Image (tube, rainbow, N blue to C red):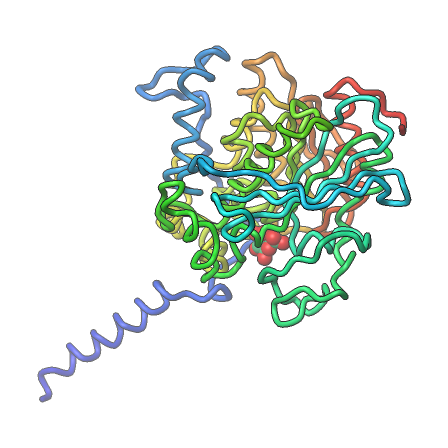
Length: 436
Ligand code: GTR
């Protein structure tokens, strides 16, 4: 008996530490929010080609390097991006030409991912277009957090009937939207401002694609469409599924005669900012990219130890990324890419990265540095980036083709943010900034 004792102790010891190591709860993960404690780190160079060859021209970038780097993100971070279903089709459910007090047209369109007329996997797109436009209009597009009916108090918006995050504050009860949810997230959607400036807006609820919980893949498109689009559920993650949906919205917008599909601005806040960036990296039809407080796994550098980390995000949200991303939980330094390279994949398209001063979790400085480190790729195209060395003061946007601001206030998508993005789009599209 006695002789077994050391072995038993050793077993208990190993079991205890293995438990900590493998089942660390989110709270156990060490987080740094002190700039003085950020250790040094090395960023991979987007212009370093395979076999040591340096990328020096935009042609080399577009012909070889871009695809190689995109694949590194697919293999290590977000998973593979499948194509669209063969039998996908659109159904215009309702059009109201007197929306928003008569100044907008509201369209509600279902994107049906199978042959079925209405049953089967689908997503519902809510579109507002300025009524008095003289020509096809540029459009902002992005996913929303709680259902289309939450983005504006407009009672004509169809209610989402899908599973919704139950935060108890947005009129969601038992994970289902109630009438009380109407307009509850309107603060994040400057619908009137967008319309007044002559732009359209197309949005859909991200839960149409995959409910945002660790079991969401079982009822989302990663299961319902796996045979149709030939991809197993573990070849991608929820962010991939949401990003895929943004491209399907683009497929619809290309068919809408009122929309200038060459002028679609893709945007997203926070986790939906991550999805927006991944969508635009894969799909170059999006003309301008706007990342709003997208943070870890979005615009922020992941090798810089500040705010949310790879390990923390993979622990709190194990369903967001491809399974391969978890191998970097303890070793971000081994990841062959970092998020400045994701931003570089937008080149030469105009890119706006925005942070908020009180949003340390998303690492504003890491977002700024990421934007800056994408500049050498934009330079291949003769495009100027942020134009500054250090972070600008709050509420002072900087930059040309890569623009950046840090807004005063917290993690949010405010009217101030929208106004900067509208000004940026006006400039890039050569539109006058006057209200229409
Ligand atoms: C947080 C998460 C962030 C960000 C945010 C959001 O809990 O840690 O990465 O995505 O949620 O989406 O609001």
